[in-house]
Length: 103
Image (cartoon, rainbow, N blue to C red; front, top):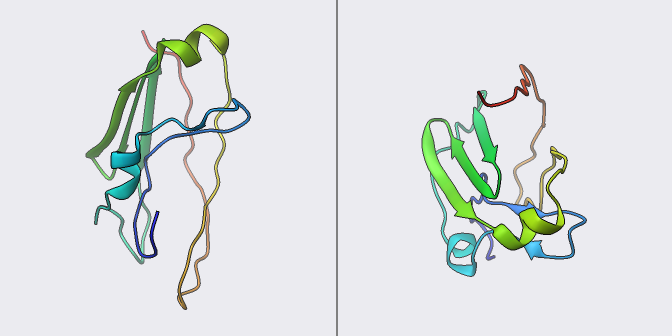
């Protein structure tokens, strides 16, 4: 990924040994869905092997990884920031985190 790319909403397989779950093409894309000086809403919906993400109501990722689901049917959610480059400083805060089962 090059400098200046916004990749919020793409998926990484932390501790799976897979690296990025999202494709090289998806990693190379950038979007302008983030609110630079306000709260952002990230949504993650996972049902079986399907994983969907959105940023502020805009779909970012929708992928199915049967291979990952077979070896890791349960997992965890990590809140983290990767590789912010440039002179701008960021303050990261999270609020209103909700986790609920799908009906």
